[in-house]
Every structure is written in structure tokens, then in C-alpha cells.
Amino acid sequence: MKGILFVFLALIILTTFLFNCATTVYVPEPPPAPKEEIKPPRPGPKAVWIEGYWKWSGDHYIWVPGHWVKKAKGHWVPGHWVKRPRGWVWVKGHWR
Image (cartoon, rainbow, N blue to C red; front, side, top):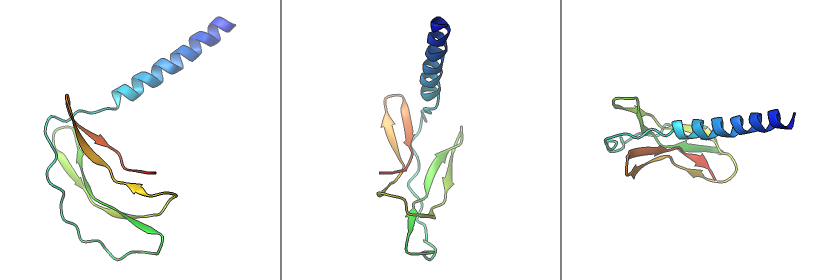
């Protein structure tokens, strides 16, 4: 029974590791300059503007427009592209 449990846990850990490795997409070319956007009126006092960004679609970049979201705890850290040895990688925005 302990052997089966060990194998099961090892498979879960391995699957998690492989899934996380597989989600990194390296883009061969840098993103275009950000587009200038006109913010629509703020919908409420707890709204935070999330800037638009360039998303890689597999063979080209697509602009994702900015939008208002309800403020969560902390402050918004914008998503951004980072140059790595294998190419450009998108770092998702998040609340910190």
C-alpha cells in the first residue's frame, strides 16, 4: 500500500513539474511598442486600470486592450515581456 501511495505522489509531482515547464512559451521576436489607449471613465472608486499588452498568438502578436477591474488586496504589478536566452517570455500581471 505504501508503495502505491509513493508512486502516486511521485506521478503527481512529476506531472506538476512537467506541466509548469511546458507552459513557458519562448517568442523569437520582441513585442511591438505598446499602443496608446484612451481610458474610458472609471466605473467606480475601487476600480484599477489594467494596461493593454501584446499577446503572442503562435505566429504573431495580438493587442489585448486595457480594461478596468475591481481592486484586490495589495497593488497591481503589470504583466511584461522579458528577454531570456531562448527568446522573449511573458510574465503575467498579478496582485502583490
